[in-house]
Image 1 (cartoon, rainbow, N blue to C red):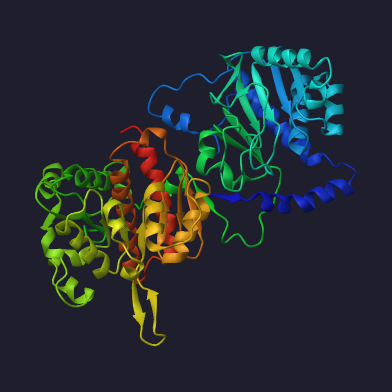
Image 2: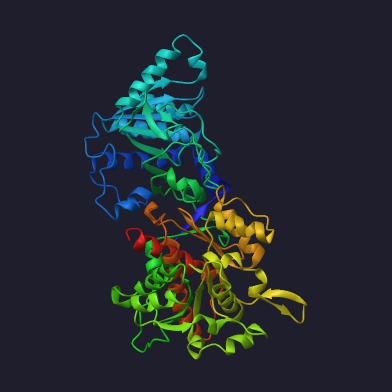
Length: 561
């Protein structure tokens, strides 16, 4: 897993190192170290000798390429010597990173041009670039106001039109909105000169200029990158929200930053390797119950396909790779065509009549005592996919949410009837409601807004700050919240948060959520069974981690399906 830093956390981690460099008489040591890493990544991307390693965080196009032959990276496969590399240089340290990188690349034989887009720049880095033979072109408002402004502008556009590589080093991690950048067509959302799309490889230094690295928010002025080379630590805003559309593949250059002493509430990115490690290996003494039993209230006569998608996705985990992650048994509570369709797709399923789960008068606990005996073996439930709005389908879902003590995935239609009181009881000593069950709410952005509006909860906008939005809702209702998106955010009520960023854009289609619910259920059922055998329960924080791992598994396995 990778810790995800806020801009303030990065600055705090850098501060003692910068002070030590200053005291040693080498104030730009960290900047030069970061710039060297940037130059190496550019050189490897250009020449493919050696090829770039796997990215720290794969971008959407790379993830989509896992399902088809990967296209050639723009600008890849030629000599570095003589290649035209144009750096767009801003006024701060980000511009300094770019200038020192251009100096390194010029020393390797590339033809490098630094376009100064502001009326000030990092003087020491600019001097180093000039000494290394980097051509410097001033392109800012003060120059434009002079007679040579139009000439300089045309010169810059000509450089960009011919560039093999464009380095975006205009704005760094402190920015919260973009600015006008030569070559970036904000209306068309592409790099272009005089309407002609540029073929250059675009590399962002630390982050695409103007991206909010706290929230992931990005306006139309933030340019796209094929590669983002980030320094010191992964920034939380690089992998959340709209950032996923801007950064391309992300590569981390380590510069020796030390994490803070307290990382408990720092978001964590769950990687594919992390997620695979959570798929439990069957043990020699296991049987179908000890491996984990998943219960499911999904589908309806109107939407039978949702039940099939959810069930088959759950059952598919563990069918390969020596059964890793596979459940031992699947119990579905069907009605009409939905129940029949699941049994036809998966003959091993135990299907019960959904009406048998409806709550009679009395407590939820007593109601569950009257359920079919097989339900007592269930370790985790999924409720909601494809249920629709009919009482015959929603009432059993509500009964499961009220009557079971194990983890419950609350998805789709079930979100519209879920209430915080369902997962709570009254503490007779304190006289207050306390959470006794772990429910996992799985809204996408629109469902999230509908849920918080219905419950009267003040939460951040998921489109602008998905991490804060998920945390706000989780804390308010005492449930784990899995906020779906291009990067999925999972937050426990305590604020412990995980991100999953391993899904391609191809998952944006009908049925993906149903499959995700099944994978989530399988992950929780297998782990809940193991925990129960030890006399333990899964904590909300552990459930949040497992749900993020399941979201990664879902992304990796179903992006092509």
